[in-house]
Image 1: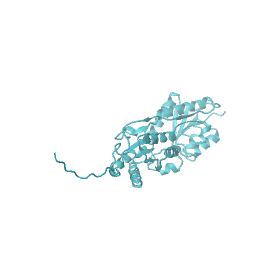
Image 2: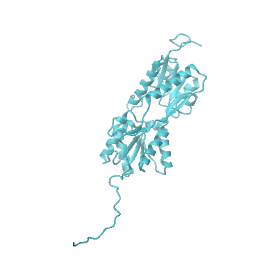
Image 3: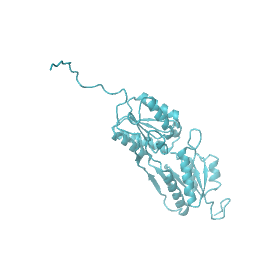
Image 4: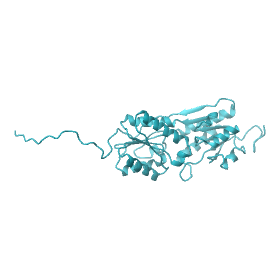
Length: 313
């Protein structure tokens, strides 16, 4: 086997690649993404590997061939997986060692670790239904991310819709930009289309503060009048008031598992790939409560009118 550029023959680079396009509205890495970068770098260091980060969202991004075709790394961890992802397809066709945080049908040829976003979204709906809520909206990520096929956005939508239908409830799903103003706007839309909505499930942590502001502006107090629950919404869950009932994103654990899968792939390339699907529990905080009628929609009293009676004692 030919030596890789810049390395001694047979020793490799002792560097892992992380293909991770920024998901922020302005092209920046979000707080959660940085947590994954740090987690992967820490786990790689424990294995004696350095980490090379590339923002490639496509194999046509210049950073992709520099990392992969030039063999600057021994293996690649791919993130922000889309349903049809040319990075995964290219790596699989080339036989280049890779694992994924996330999954699609092509990623099954390699190891992956992922959250059960469909199951988590369905669990959030069930939690609200158990509290008596029947009008439950769903706030997803942006239209751009959803239309580009990001797996978590599609899976969350599927889990929400399936569970709503199973409970014989009408689903109302909304796409929302990843910013405060979009969060306020989506609440306006939800309450405009169905003023009797009493709760929502959200996958859009970046818009969470705007969602809260929109509810306050429309006279809804969380959780007295309106309940909110998040699908994998840390670390924002503790930064809003009241704190958000939500499933946690175990970024550090997922990063560690991904690096372990990568080490297994490099050391035992012929071993069958492992697939790890995590479903963290929902942490109850202060943003959900029993269903109350939406303000202004309380039914009129059904008690009969009684005539005035004068009583002499």
